[in-house]
Amino acid sequence: MTDDVVVLRYGHRPGRDDRMTTHVGLTARALGADRVVLPDNAGQSAETIRDITDRFGGPFAVELRDDQRAYTRDWEGTVAHLTMYGERVQDVDADIRANSVDDDTPLLVIVGGEKVPFDFYEAADYNVGVTNQPHSEVAGLAVFLDRLFDGEELEREWADADRVVMPQETGKRVVDPADAYDRDEE
Image (cartoon, rainbow, N blue to C red; front, side, top):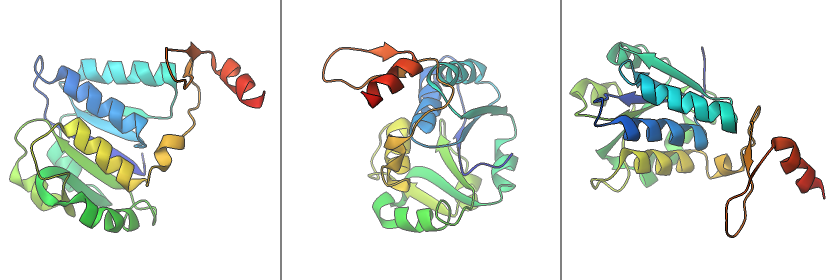
């Protein structure tokens, strides 16, 4: 299976990381990645992400793997590891984009969930810090993907959605996709 942008969530502590792992996957989906690879013990997070994809559209794939080190080591493409200890995202985002998205080279984005072994740092073509300050891996992934895609992911249209959220100033409005497109044409 080839993808343009794959997010690998390294590590998952059941009971402690369930919500964060789920949000890594949902953020990857919403902001332009093609697939998320989760640890094999994150089955509940995988099911939630698949359910959201079924309801709100795709394409987006979710995979569970127990061989994350081997998966990273065998990756044929560019590897970016998000870490507070990396180079500033604003200094390397254009280079990463040029060496992945712009030249159709697959990009693996590693997001840690627990202490990341040093071999991930060594396997990475880029160790990238978003602010070089402690914060959420979900926030780091969101900023990274937005910079990677130059904001174009915000205009994405979703296929096979059961529902569409209609943007509006206040309130919540979720409609059938056919109704959303009919309104756009009026």
